[in-house]
Amino acid sequence: MQLGELGAAVKARREALGLSQQALGRLAGLSRATINQLERGTLRDLGVAKLFRLLGLLGLALTPQRVGRSGRGLSMASRTASVSYRRALEPDSLARALASGAIPPGMEPHVATLLDEAPLEIVVRAVEEAARRERVDPGRIWRNLARWAGELRSPRRVWA
Image (cartoon, rainbow, N blue to C red):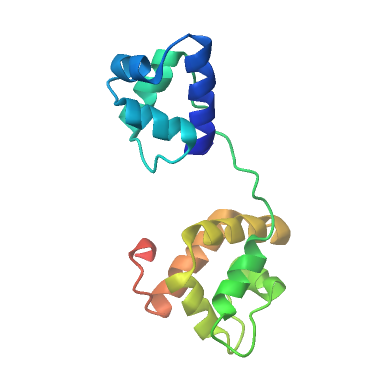
């Protein structure tokens, strides 16, 4: 759930309780401006403790759920890895490489780019998709990525 979606739920609950933004802010220990920004979807960050206090006060729950973003992880990862290169690392090749641990010949720079620069959300999605497609344990793919990072000397601390 995004902060904007929470804001809409907070507004609906606040109105159902007959509270003004000012009154809710006082009860929750937040400013009226913070409540207003949350409800409008313009608040950038609230902090977990403040968010849980506000939700608890309103009787709302924050339920963890997977965001519906399945698929296209390999496509996005291969595109990110290939952006600076004439020859592309194809999604199918990337899936096989992730599962087997063998980097396709000539694709080392692509894999280095993926390890060093790809948004981690894309990497996670690619791992999940490759594991499902190639029928391997995702842990095996993460180990392959960590090994590649060492071999290719990735400066990204996440792989250390």
